[in-house]
Length: 290
Ligand SMILES: NC(=O)c1ccc[n+]([C@@H]2O[C@H](COP(=O)([O-])OP(=O)(O)OC[C@H]3O[C@@H](n4cnc5c(N)ncnc54)[C@H](OP(=O)(O)O)[C@@H]3O)[C@@H](O)[C@H]2O)c1
Image (cartoon, rainbow, N blue to C red; front, side, top):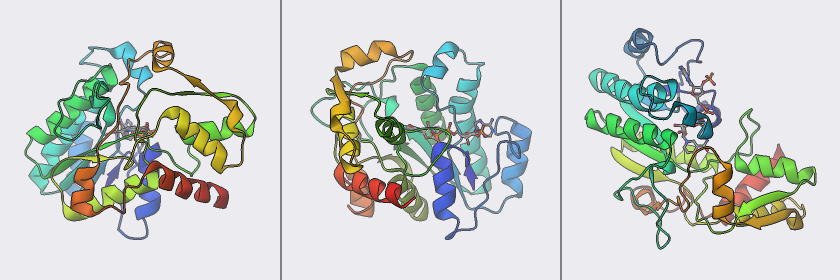
């Protein structure tokens, strides 16, 4: 069962898994996950042994107006609902993969990427609520994995634009782009992330797992790499510092929100999550083919 199957991440999960598994992916209109009675009934009548949760409030800046509001929609979706979902999955003997984010970290680590066991330190309301959601899921004791993904980018069209497709669209129109130079990030090609979620689900891995690129880049290098691969001018890409970028956003963001994926590699091998260069090669090949 895929919840949030119309979203940026969920829609690719549905695309890539449809041929291999019997999928149930109710739309928001079919199931409002905040309607507890409906959620309980939907899960109870389904035989799906695995639930993958992509339903969330994922607008980082748009969450700020609800800061500290535990009666708000952001809190309900990101903090309260995941724990309820995990409780139901536990009661019904279903395995849950709950997707979370690198933003649970404070981003001060410049020497090494964040490991699953590192202390968290959310900087904005979105991140605080996502962290509470993670903790709520794990506290239920259900058979569940919290999979933290970072900056998924896709070659497929979707109403919500990720950084790669936003860059591509702008650079194709010869519009300038600005990329941060002093920020370590591990953006994951969405297809790789979906494969990783598949491996986690098959293995019924429990606990927290990072799902990101196997190596870091910066937004500036990432955008230039896109331009270069697509035969567009890298001169359109200007550099800016994190100190200049950060105040322009409503939500405070972690500077170095890079994730260490060695735990994933230990469990599932080194071939699923790739280095940024290899991911971008695969992404560019798919963009050219679509
Ligand atoms: N995108 C990123 O850059 C990023 C980075 C790190 C982590 N993540 C995490 O990845 C997960 C998926 O993110 P995303 O970018 O795919 O989000 P998204 O595109 O905003 O999708 C959210 C999904 O949740 C559904 N939803 C929201 N409220 C609902 C409700 N009350 N009942 C039923 N469905 C509801 C939406 O359906 P409708 O649209 O029909 O309402 C949509 O399918 C989230 O947990 C997010 O925190 C995302």
